Image (cartoon, rainbow, N blue to C red; front, side, top):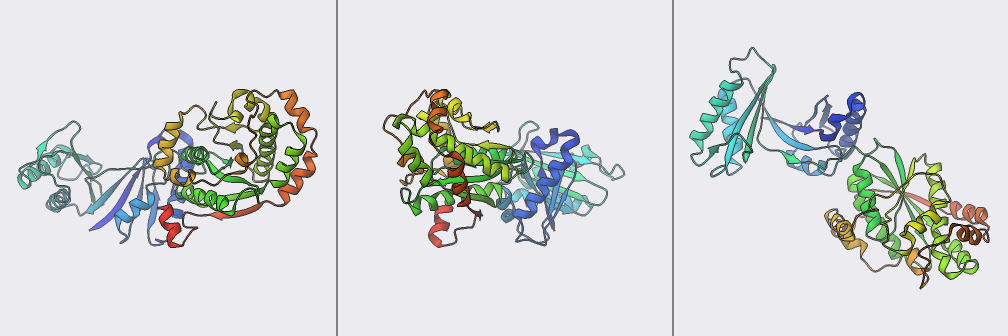
Length: 401
């Protein structure tokens, strides 16, 4: 029996005249996810999408597509000839795999072929009686049944489905433009990246490293976090920024309590330059209001002064426990809490300014040769593509999954 996968769009259904662009992007993202299955065919339609499996295992394909944003839900759909006896046999066989006794069900028939002998009511009664006879412990319930058997009578065939599997929701990655994310090795920025991906943004990752103050293990940890995110966003560009010289110069020239403010201003300048070169539309970070000294509103004013580029903070108003819950859900938490220091923590002063003055920040920053420092820093940026399977040793695979 032929099996295809029915994909429902969810939020994409509200996009009106732009809907086609969203569904086509979703189709491309699905094809990219299924690159190892070249025989699978994807057919985007206005209200839903079909994936013709052509022999591939439906549940393996569903597992691959569960992290793809833009998919509201899936249903395995079984194609049956236009013979109600064959439909009855298919329905009973499918229900037998769902342990139907002591559960409730309903038959929901849709008919676009109005010349077919059975109308929707006839189909519901015929199939409902067959199910009740086959499974004495099952009961009919029209509202919120445990199992809904969907029957779609079309001109060319009849389609039957009995299960709906929840998808990732959101918008297809790439439909909301490109952004540059300041990715640390902590808990918050990977969650910010995940939430941005869910809203359809193509996320490029910018990480600041300060060897020898930060270790190779700290950089590797951050790349593994990127690989976790690549499960949701496909392959991701990872920019490693050599930040040691800038931090050392800041430490020499700036009062201790303003080091963090000036450091973050330089990070933002560099990220903005990378964003501009990459055609990005915004900067993304994992700042949460009031969590640390550089994330007070006063600090944000003093730091944001260096750019007019929009800065998106997906976790800005979230409680730390809520951020941790998402980090655990997307499997980044255990990596994030590994004890490798990043460049912010190794140069953090004991008493950073929590309410820095904008005028003071500008004054202290003017002591540095900003353009020369940035040019040397940007010349040393390394770029690589991170995929979900970028780490292929057994230990790395265990860490990822």
